[in-house]
Length: 225
Image (cartoon, rainbow, N blue to C red; front, side, top):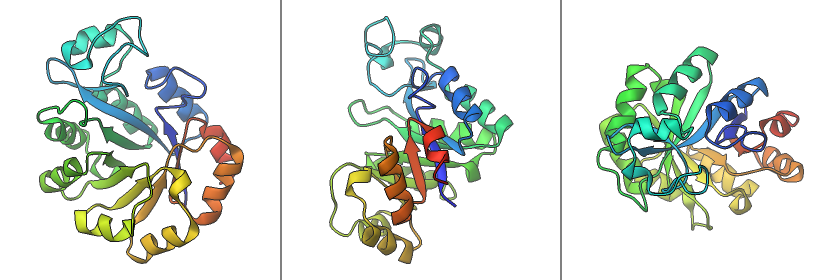
């Protein structure tokens, strides 16, 4: 089974990482939602891609300098809001922890606490470009799956993934071929590709055997599954 994962919700149709985008993704038949997690000034996990609010709101400044209430007034939802939506609709979540440019203290602990609160341990995969963060997540709760995000080609990524102790590779789709997928599968690792929006590329990722296709257009992905 290939998972159809809506990138920041159905962000090709609605503003990214909003409740509207998440609800639209569910309407379009996604299997799950990918989103980005950061911390508000008061330490609440919230959902936004950029480290600043400038691009996606009419405000300006770093996410870390606004309270959760202030961010929600800008249309930025909390992780708990999405957890409730996911639980009600029986979908999975891919939570990317955004702790590279800004290093959020206890981001991993706070996110995992919420996952446990909603008993979603088996319905969430955590991912990050910060691979040390994924090691930390496994130390906190080994039962939650982790994935290693990367954008350039790696030498023997399946061996690196095993060394780090992660469950999946999350490569940019242009770095993926059938041999790489087979090498990962031989070691019982998943290959979850991002961000695949053009139908020709979606079809190619299906053919090479990707386990998850992360796309702004879950409706396009669904046609090939």
